[in-house]
Length: 297
Image (cartoon, rainbow, N blue to C red):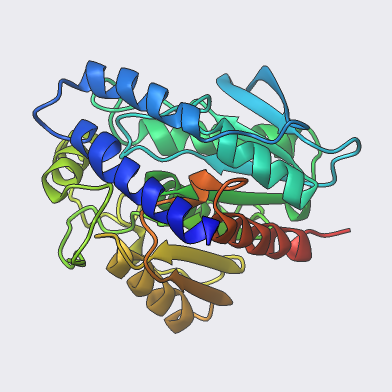
């Protein structure tokens, strides 16, 4: 009985507190401050330890939650490329580190509009290549991300492939934003988090005049062939549902091993509630298994 009540309460919290923040009527500097406070409700496990570092001239937060982590996850945070940080996502990265047994590295990639495309993929790729240059095998590295970070994970894989760099062992996307042109948004009866006008403005600020259908901005328009195995998780109560299903269709079309999971009556990046909401913890456990199963020994 407790979990349904918790789920309803969290949905109301997102709808009444988070959704109003993500509005073009709220100045961006306030959005960034408010979202930092909102993410305080996403609580990492007690075993998680966080340290700051620098990789490829990009600030990162390293997260470990087990005595001897095996493998590395580069986790790319969401926020429409205009808000969010490595620090806001400690809840997600802490639980992912605990459940996967990996070290999680979260880049503090540069945000628009101060640093529009291609700053974010440049920074994310720099972190990945810094690990490769430290002789960490690509097969022991996984990529993961939520929302814009999910799209960013795909974009840097496309760049790595096209530059003939070694690819990571897997990709995990939570509610990925894969079509910034918003040509085929889903319209659920209830959308507790995102507003279409806000995501459209974030896309404009990030692209800064580049075509929104550029595959490095909207990966659903790209050739996804030769990408590593992919797990996609999405809630049924979010406007990005079609971004996830279209990504899965495109990946399967191009021969990529792909698993799509749609969680009924859950919202955008519900995994932030891991450790509290049972279905969020279950989804994170599935993601951890996906990552671990594709790491090379």
